[in-house]
Image (cartoon, rainbow, N blue to C red; front, side):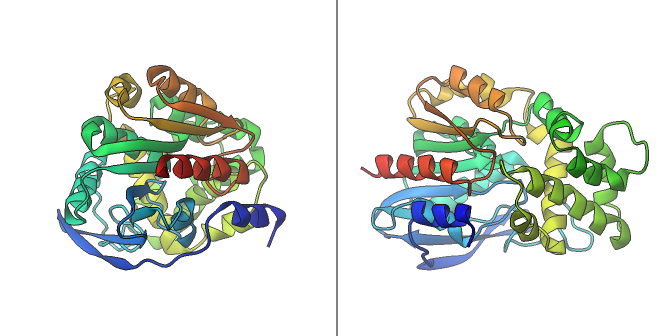
Length: 325
């Protein structure tokens, strides 16, 4: 195990298996995989994974004290163990939108018999957490957020149209390669054509290139192990397709909506953990959210973007520990 991995393992709670899991039919032909771990009588908490298009990992259960929390986690539409999968032939993402995910969360809450819960999310998970909390503030006890992402056009352009590429030029060249020599234009739109092309010889390399760009730039120090974790072709294609689908559609938000409506969070305690050198989701967005939601604790740390970076993980665990009391 690397030094970083050892430090992370010391910060997180020990590995834990779910005590319950299942599939929930949420309509639109969608079945959502969910699981619960910790204490069935503990404080309810909901974990929202990133992407969109990511999936649960076993370590995500470890950010909560299992003796105090009842943690509910789920794979969002068409990724992870949820069905149908976005990497399947003829995948149709038309029923995969932010607001359908928000209603999926409500269905899970009702199905699991939860009245109110803490909502924990990072990167895309922070956007989904904000969307849910702004729609249903009465259901949220606290928000624990990191790597703030609100899908404003400036954020998408920074990461996918050249800004971030100036700080990681070799990785950026690999990202541009499927678009052809001398490409100039909107990379998000151009990738959309590749990712949804029915020919595997086109969509599989595009999925890998899109997903590798994120994996390669999401930690302060490049980690080949982290890139390898994203390399499964089915995972990479689903991740890329769902992300691109959301980004082409601006996250299904009005421009700047999540920050503009942050006044709805004024009665919700919260924590914003943000890597100072986050290449994927620059710190400017976290600052904008904190200005709109000053009730939250704002905690910039020496890190990049990933939840697995020890400086980020330590603050997240400290927050869940504090709210458990």
